[in-house]
Image (tube, rainbow over all chains, first blue to last red):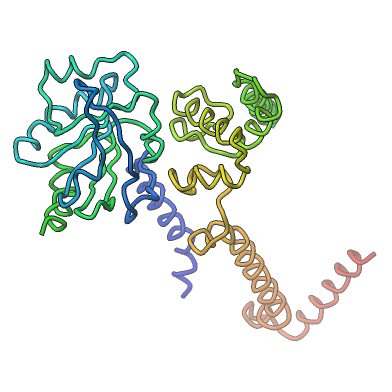
Length: 175
Length: 165
């Protein structure tokens, strides 16, 4: 009992250090999305490269798909691009929302580097981004067959994140 | 000590400065009434990009977009609560600098009170124990005889009497 009393400050200190240490590895950008479990907001936007056609999430009903919010000006999106190409080659349906591309570079960039996207809706004013609670690019939403958002990942996708976090969910939802 | 005070004063001053700056980042005032409402509302909202800046004070592009959105909704005649709800629906409670009181935030709101309670409890227990020890345990532990005890009591009474005066 006496020993415990003497050790108590040390124990409290250890708990505090534990919390602080955990805090070191938390991503402050990883804000819990209020959309998880809710229907993906509807929109209809012209496509990059062919403004006469539009894309709306309705057209993806029955598929488990990724909505990747990206922009040509975003450096980590370029970093993510190669891996998205791999995923697309594996048959993962990805739609790339082109967010606030004021310089209008998306079409040429995708023509040059290849496009991992089934469709690239063009959100120039950033309204759809706001409707999805986007705070920065890249962000990726996993949307299920019924059009419900199941996950949001903030930051670039990588093989590790895909294998650990996203793929298990996609597989489960695809069943 | 002096250095500490100077540092504290500096910190406070820079804090004031930051607050003064935060109030300045708002161009575009077509409708002063709406602009005023916007600023007042946006000061309690978090810029999602800079996170430690308010929506009113931030120069981030998303903050500008959101201010534009809020401005338009106000022009459409939406109330402040409706506008805030619009933002909460999209960005969660995180946009609010003052989180709402609900089950997940009970610990956040009541935590400080809880710690005060724990502290008061510990203090009370300590006082009780000390009083008990003063009344009984000490002399026996120290192995003093009855005469020494008497002497000690007398001295203690003197001291506490002095204090009372």
